Each structure stands twice: as C-alpha cells, then as structure tokens.
View 1 (spheres, helix red, strand yellow):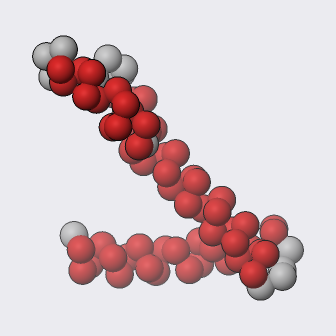
View 2 (cartoon, one colour):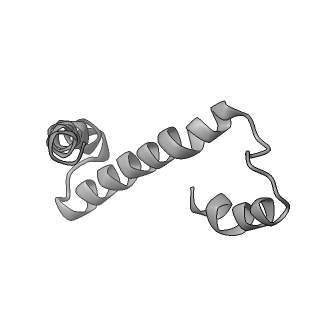
View 3 (cartoon, helix red, strand yellow):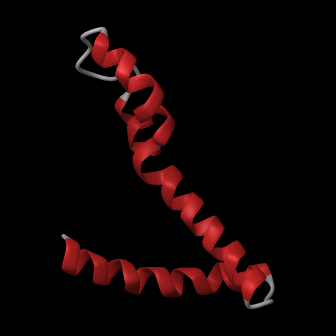
Length: 78
C-alpha cells in the first residue's frame, strides 16, 4: 500500500495525471484485501509465538479478538 503512494504517485502527479493507471479492482485489493490479510497473518503468527500455542488454534482466536475490536473502532472512529 505504501510503495505506490511514495514512489509512483509523485511521478503521476508531476506528469499531470489525475487517475491511477491500474483498474479500480486492483486499487481495492491494494487498499482493503492485502493489508487486512497481512494484519491477520501477523496477528496469528504473533499470538502463536508469544502464547506458545499451535498456529491453527491462533487462526481461530485472532478473528474472535479482531471482530469486536473492529466494531468498537467503527463506533468511535466512524
């Protein structure tokens, strides 16, 4: 998500482009799917390493913690 913002966007802006050269579905992947899957993977890995539990078990525990926290963030941050 950060690479296009830091390295590609300045060149597009300097060239006078107002839209990105890739399709909208690629932009949605870049903004939503890839960061959320990375967050899920790192959270599961960290939980399994710190608590010394099996990683399949941590794959089930992480959504149980992230969903309520996401709902609270949605209420207060909106």
